[in-house]
Image (cartoon, rainbow, N blue to C red):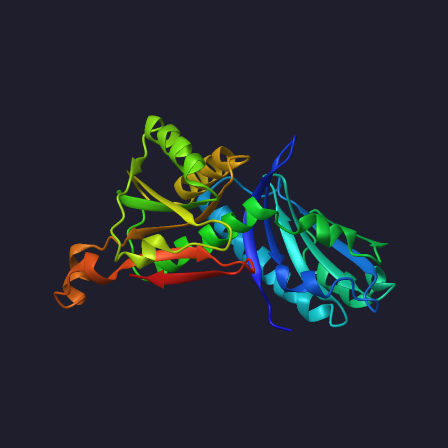
Length: 284
């Protein structure tokens, strides 16, 4: 099966969880042959505070993760949860997976780490469904993918630029009402020309687009904050959030390597979320 990993943050009443999950299983879960939930939890309080200690811990935990996957050959790795105090790995396996000698052997290689493992029957995969992202968290997953793609292409994400957001509405009245609210919040309303098809795309039932912008960086925490703000504002308004885009920012050396091509001509990267919930990057 093709893996579809997504990363997002979820804040509960007591803590902030960073969740990595393979969303591909959502259509096939539960798997009758794998009814047992297995968790391996590493206590992070014992990790040193120095930079070198943290780097060493990351390397060891990455190795532990790989060794667990190799050992649990009859299980599927569905994801992990990271909090300031612990790191949890989750798998679904055959009944009795929690007592596998291979698992105990792996954990025995890390005697200095405080590790706990437990397993329980979860035949309907209820914990997996708990981890699956909601609509807003799906947007956050795509934000992370988009920012990673920008970084990978050399974008200096800490540099401010115009960041555009696409909103769609069921009727023009709601669009105009929300537009006035957004102006008061410091957003700029972008005027759309008839030939700007990229800015004017709509979805069935949402024929009224609105494009707004702000001048700021595209670091993940900035983008997530904006998307959460807009998503909350649109609730109950007859509108939906449909993605964001920005002009890429390069260093002087990177601009030279582009070969003199005008940066803003071809590097407007637009992320839009399709109706199936999977994201794509469009370029203008």
